[in-house]
Amino acid sequence: MFKLIHTDKSTKARLGKLTTAHGEVDTPVFMPVGTQGTVKAISTEELKGLGAEIILGNAYHLYLRPGLDIIRKAGGLHKFMGWDKPILTDSGGYQIFSLATLRKLSDEGAEFSSHIDGSKHFITPEKAVDIQRIFGSDIMMILDECVHYPAARDYVEQSLELTTRWARRAKEYFSRPETIDHRPKTSMRQLLFGIVQGSTYLDLRKKAVDGLLKIGFDGYAIGGVSVGEPENLIHEVAEYTASLLPQDKARYLMGLGTPPDIIEAISNGVDMFDCVVPTRNGRNGQAFTWSGELQLRNAAYKEDLRPIDDKCECFACRNHTRAYIRHLFNTEELLGLRLVSLHNLHFYVKLIQLSRAAIREDRFGDFKEKFLSQYRKR
Image 1 (cartoon, rainbow, N blue to C red):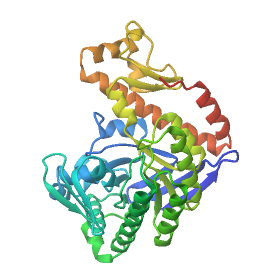
Image 2: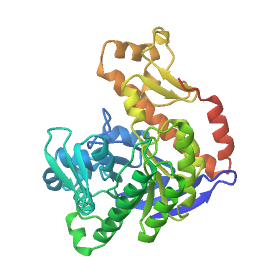
Image 3: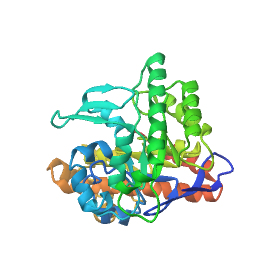
Image 4: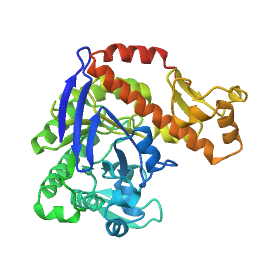
């Protein structure tokens, strides 16, 4: 469960603590994305070493491969992947609507064809709960429809009504005692988060929040952002939606993240973040530093014998240079993408840790201003 500890005096930034079956999580928090039961190219021990407190998995991908039977036999997702800290799993709603082919929605659920082999599947709100029970997820997400931008208002209204009906069914099913038998045994019940949709229509966002609050969830996610809309709209929707959510529940902004995006959202009272950016971009040679973004493939770094960031204490920065890492990418050596991914995750975790310290000392406004003034986008 979530406990609000402190709110910064100059912004809406919050310190909190989220208690789960696999331990406590300090918030704000960044969750590295382990879509298929792994944070790409990074071991679980490396994740612990850089300070990750919780990671994210994806029900859509894990349901298709390796499948529920294998994860059940392993004793749940934690044991299957060798991670003993908290895990949040997305229900797969976004992937059903972005990756799957020939999808068809109804009141009952979502029918889709696998993007892997074309096989047919049908997921209901109840089945999404069952899947995540089998995983033993510390935090489960409801099944929802994520509407891409731009979307006509009448479609968004219909989609929101469907998502709200699915949310009610998910909560009712989740609350039945007999459904708990599906999950691996843990010392505490799993948590279920609702997801606020509504695209960029602020009145529909409010309608979504009102509907979810009537149902009642352990936490609330802001979904349907960073799906094609301009940056100013992303921040406007996230800020407005966060302002509607209860103070005593965790607030999770799904799928957003560049470092400036995260700092902006923290200042608006968001507690939890996930994004593939640090590892996906790291695999392509982009590094995040306190002065901004670097593309280490560029010729400018051919003879640059400095670390990625001289203010960083990660393994890559302690042991290797920009020139060496550029060489690794140019020769297609796998170590290059691992080093930059490690660095980026370390940077994200450190950014969150420093944000917490600034909130605790009521100086997050100054911290935010200084960071954004020094950070250069490339």
